[in-house]
Image (cartoon, rainbow, N blue to C red; front, side, top):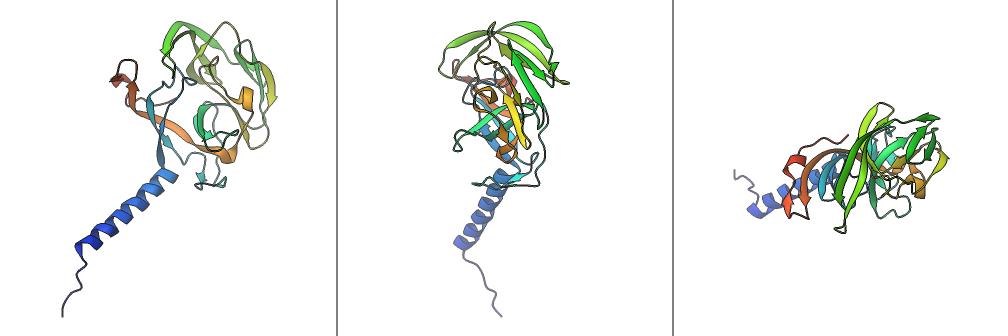
Amino acid sequence: MSENIKPVWREWLESLIVIAVLAVVIRSFIVAPFKIPSSSMVPTLLVGDYLFVLRYPYGFRIPFTDIQLLSKQAHRGDVAVFVYPDDKSKDYIKRIVGLPGDKIGYRKNVLYINGKEMPQKAMGKYTYFMADGRADVSDLYEENLDGVKHEILRKPFSIRDGQWTVPKHMYFALGDNRNNSRDSRFWGFIPQSYLIGRAAIIWWSWDAEKGAPRWGRIGQLIH
């Protein structure tokens, strides 16, 4: 009795289909790459950083839809990737500072959550390059975001002050570069279903000004 032997081309085709399906599943539901295009998250993230974003911490978002399965609430301090509310064709990355029901205040570059000031500790000056190649110098601070310590940049002036109450199933997000970020102070809240994933690790970083990798950033965890 003769065996049915598959042609080589068919074996290759089946293998490629399996690999493609696995890649789509992994990218859609487990982990996806993300490139930092702007300076809104400096000093945490620099222009030219390449990240891996975990897609499951907030639930599973069905690709090309606003449907999110097994939704999980974000945590304060998360660096999150989400669908930009003003243009759903774009993905943004900011830090979640306000959770559903929170009262957010921002005055003179100081953040208040439910009436409590988020302390800032001055750490000197910080020089960086923006996406267009221009250099900028800002004041570097360590902000204690209700127990989550991270670095921010700010100027002596504030670009947008105000008070906001975060609705149910919504979030308030800020860029860590507080004077160079269009965030929830300008375009409002992020719906739960718009959350794509949490930034986890820098896997590559390219310094366009020096034309060289930033070796010291590769492998850094994002917090």
